[in-house]
Length: 161
Image 1: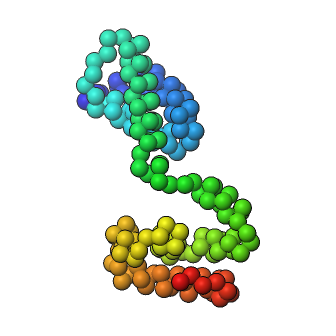
Image 2 (image 1 turned 90 degrees about the horizontal axis):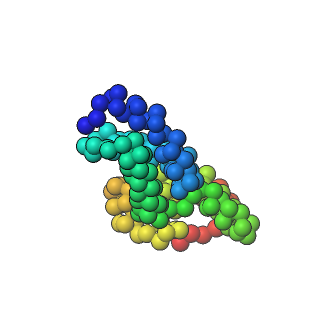
Image 3 (image 1 turned 30 degrees about the horizontal axis):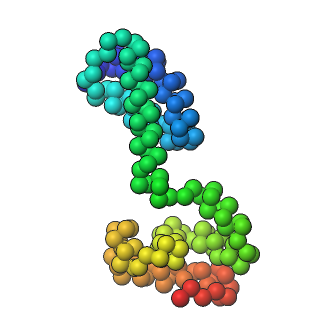
């Protein structure tokens, strides 16, 4: 493990390079900060001895690129859509469907999760209970309550069965 002094010097020397590489690959400030922390944590925990400053810089570049690639190909990244993309898709829908999307997004989080998973991703209540770590009866209750809330928000003009 490296000393605090070594780590601070490395951050001073390589922080700009690491951040720029992350922004080029990820195009996202939050992910850039996550990878920045990951890279410097790997540095602190690494026992690699560097032959020169160029060798150290090359190590930081390689580790940063690999960490960015790992994040980009992670399950989470490949199975999610940004909220902006969802809103953009919803705005392209006919007005009736837009109302439904807006009503779903206005639900409290606990209802929104089960509605989205059940009606938009076609998961069963049992599967949702496993995903969310809730009792299956709780999921049924949340679905029932969310349907009632949606009926109220949409004026009872939609059926979700």
